[in-house]
Length: 131
Image 1 (cartoon, rainbow, N blue to C red):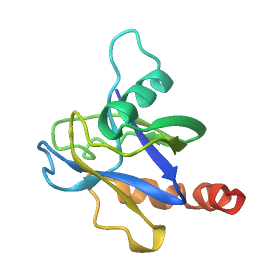
Image 2 (cartoon, helix red, strand yellow):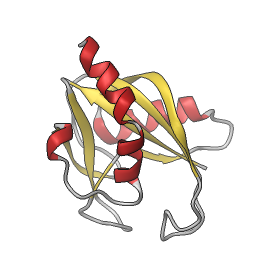
Image 3 (cartoon, rainbow, N blue to C red):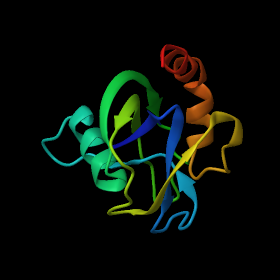
Image 4 (cartoon, rainbow, N blue to C red):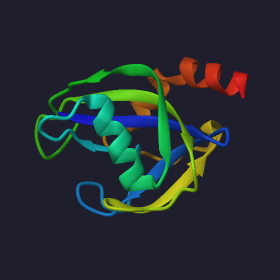
C-alpha cells in the first residue's frame, strides 16, 4: 500500500526528482509506502514532510490507483490525496530535489503520475481559483 500527493504550494504543483530507482532522476509526485499501523492520511503527511520539507493539509481524495503495471517493482496500490502545502521546499529522503511547476509546464512524469494529475485537474483548478 502506497500514498501519493498532488500538492499545491504558491499556486504551483510540487514535484520531486527521484533519487532512487525506479525512474531515478525522473519527476514524480511526493509519496511512498504506508508503514504498519499508519493510516493513509498519516502516511502522506509523513512522506510529504520527509521528501519535500513541506507540511500539508489534505483537501480531498483524488482516487485509488491499482493498475498492476503502474509500478515496475510490483503490484502497488496507491491512495492519492490533493493537498495544499506550507513551508520551504527542501529535498529529503528519496528526493534528489524539489521543484514547483505550473500546470501548463509540467515535465514528463514517472509511474502513472501524469494520469493522476489529469484526473485531479478540476479539483486543482478549484483550489487555484480560491487562492
